[in-house]
Amino acid sequence: MLNKKIGVIGIASALLLVLGGCGDKPAAAPDEGGISTPTVVSGADSSEEPAASASASPSLQPSEGETSPSPAPASATASPSESAVPSASAPAEEKQTQTISVYYTDQQMTVLKESKAPISFTKGDDKYTEAFKALQNSGSGDLISLWGKMELKSLKFENGQIVMDIHKPDEAQLGAGGESFALSALTKTLFQFPEVNSIELLVDGQKVESLMGHADLLHPMTRDNMAD
Picture 1 (cartoon, one colour):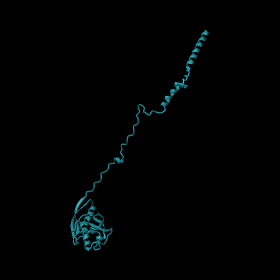
Picture 2 (cartoon, helix red, strand yellow):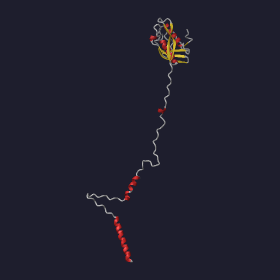
Picture 3 (spheres, rainbow, N blue to C red):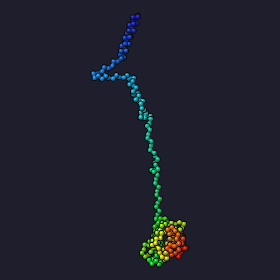
Picture 4 (cartoon, rainbow, N blue to C red):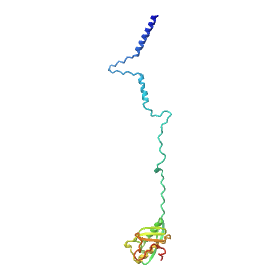
């Protein structure tokens, strides 16, 4: 009986030796070129590499069920320069045309003569300025302007009064009769407009006693004090 047990133990030991020898694999012999083939690393180490690379960086692609962020929409509000609508420009004032009476003298400067002249204007002050310009040019060789050599510096109309400032060069000087006709021609031409009640005539911005040194210059000239 004892011998049988010893035999079983011996067989078991022999099997263990055989199994242990099978576990140790001999290294591969080098090929004829002298270069050894690298030993294959066990699967436990190699299996860690894909796991490491998989966790190195998160995927840029959205996972299932998630939506990628859409680009911010362009602002729907237009800039002030784009959205501003240019306002309509104010309509130009309509030019009016009127035929007025203008006064000149004859070539001998013996009488005051009336003539007709058209004027065009857009506002009140322009009307009186154009009337004075008509007084400066008769357009006829038979009629002599008494204000042709005067220079109008400014003219404005306010509260029924025309205030005009002139410059009188030396060549505009007239005699006593010519000065009287000149003032009459001016007042008759401007007083034909019913809204004009008085005329303040300045010479280079100053109130002078006489326009040409022969007759008094009233300040202002009115319909009453300049009546014939």
